[in-house]
Amino acid sequence: MAEAPVTADLSRLPADTVTLLRRLGALARERGTDVYLVGGLVRDLLLDVGSVDLDVAVVGDGPAFARRASEALGGTLVVHERFMTSTVTLEDHTLIDVATARTETYERSGALPRVKPAPIDADLRRRDFTVNAMALQLAPAAFGVLLDPFGGAADLAARRLRILHDRSFLDDPTRILRMARFAARLEFGLEDGTAARLAEALEGRAFEFVSGDRLREEIYLGLNELEPAAVFGRLEAWGALDTLLPGASPGGDLAELEELAGRLIALCEKGATWDPSALRLLLLMRSALPPALDAAARKLNLPPSSREVLKYAPRLPELARAAEAAEKLSNVHKVLRGMPLEVQLAVLVFVGPPEARERVFTYLRGGRGLAPELTGDDLQAMGYAQGPGLKPILEGLVEARLDGAVHNRRDEERWVREHFPRPPLAPSDPSAN
Ligand code: ATP
Image (cartoon, rainbow, N blue to C red; front, side, top):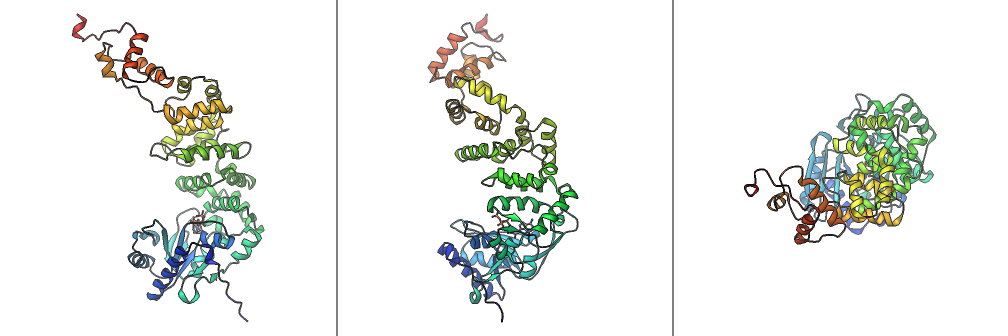
């Protein structure tokens, strides 16, 4: 007798999402094809943990289905022809990633795959781990029925990660990093065969075949997990970290530092001028020496701004001590001025005593971008000569502002006259004669 189909309990999803999934299933049927819910959401639904991405795979022409779905649901559409994938964004900001069910072939290890439309079983076969190779049917007649050709549900129950075939890590070594993320996040172990293939892939120096950009993307995903120290701790325990990122230290106090950094990152607005991932990478590499830092920057093809951040790793303890010793905001400014925000935040993470931490935090929140009201032109109008002599005056004004010695333009003028009493007159100033 055939086994009864397993149907997932979709009631754990918001009612709107279930309605949306039913509509996608009906829309695909109208076109004579099938659509499946795939990827992390299926895994997380069966595990009963939260997940937000909607990934669906369509048998046939994915972009055409995405276009139809976007019209019917009133969304906007972006198509990535090369990968046969599309993203539909609904008015309520729900994102639906629509992929064409496909096979992928790897021409060489670590390269991007060549893709070809295929039935859903073949699509599931190209995936990374059995727990990520399940699909839920969305067709009205079989809504919610689980497709699980590789025993993903059993592996979920046994809390283990298992690759689908022996060459998996050789085809795509970034799966090792994905495995560390899932193992840490879900607290899963490795199935024995998978652990053996991992050891072989590391022996064959699998990461050497991956481009710096792909490595960086995957490492940044790991750094942005809720517990990055656990992700990199797994890689270390597997013997993968030495070849991947020599000089990284996931142990010791990293978890604590990351936790504090996470809270700071949430307080700071992410802007074009700073990158939370660079801060997290700096913390991971906090014990590395300059040659290892240079090597990491090259290996991950870091942009110049992140390279600059990473260079500060060996100085963090000394900077934190100096910041702790600073009794006034102006002293904090002298320690931290001109440094990238990522570095300043890392210093704050290292500062121990609460009072000192509060002071550095106050500086970063309000003082860091402080400028005096008086400009160089104003100082010249007051009789000070143009040129490098203006710099200490303007800098002194910033410090006076930080320490609350001046509050407005008139205070500033008074402060300047008091502290720089005999203005050197500009040579071109006609009143000099
Ligand atoms: P997360 O919860 O981190 O988003 P996810 O499982 O949804 O996890 P995605 O990176 O969004 O991960 O990928 C969606 C699905 O695509 C995965 O579940 C997996 O089936 C497949 N996949 C992604 N990257 C790879 C890869 N490098 N090799 C094989 N399959 C992959």
